[in-house]
Image (cartoon, rainbow, N blue to C red; front, side, top):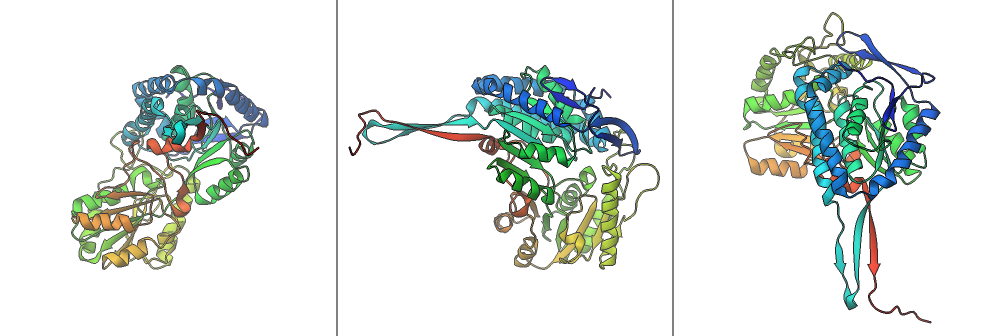
Length: 483
């Protein structure tokens, strides 16, 4: 594994400042410290902001096609180094190589390629008016964007935010999660190698205080956060106080509704992907699984059989398909929710225990007989804990599925496509799935409603959130005035 060589990447090069607070990088599979980075000092933050501001205006003056070429070259480099980047992602997060080889750097490269291709098409419109007058609009860069990442997809999130920002002509300072700080540094390194001018994509490390310093800096024009609702509230309020543009991709407690006419095997596959992929550490996960009573017993039986096939072990072994939690803290949170599930009367179907030995492993866990008022049905766990709830009919399940402050995602499995479309029409969620779950192609907008966020990532919609519209009125004749 080729590790980054310093804590920060600023103005096209690695930068170290050991005056910042040390942050140990812990490999979740063993609990061993594999690296140490240092939180950004005020000098580091100032260096990053000034470097970004100095580089941004010249970058914005390039054509979109010229900017896009750089992003597409970076995508090619990223794909060529997929294995190396996947190894680093696995050390950073603990996710198995069987996932990271196919999802993480590859989806980051998809974002770079997609927005690189889109950059040249970022245009305004011509608006004909009466008396020969006309107007035009132009999409312009916002300026300096700040990206604040979550710990579950460090490479992907660094590009989901960076690619559209750069395509629109902005500069970006990206602060990864302190839990998984390494991967974004490699993204910055690759972008510069691909020809990105120095200073346009800087990565600095730190805890919440560094994020707060960036968000409150008046020179920052846009903030994009992936994180929890409590963090989102704070960041959104701080950004709003200075009228900054924001994208908030926050948490969820998403419903997955399985009707009794659905294909059982596909439904179980969807529920597994919606709860246990990445050891359950996915914001859009469908952790409230509503199963119609007619197939409830068959669903639980087949689910338990399939979970017995999970290969739990060394994430570097490509046969492993279920890895550890990202940290001891997150493991403890999951174990506490398992105890709450038991205490509040849910029936433990399978799992429920920490796995003995080194690392932060917990069994894939399923509770049945879950009611809507239980903690495990209301609160985001962010771990491999599935709550199975039964329902009778369509109207009932819509009301129960929507009875949450969250609205990130929702899914429905049914053979009746008319019902499927009725359901997604009625569900309060920004990202929905029919007979599938957790697909996230870059061509499709991703984001939530209610407390799950503001704005959208990916697709052409992201361009709207990383640019601003300027209107220009052109008078072709003489100008009249009342005096």
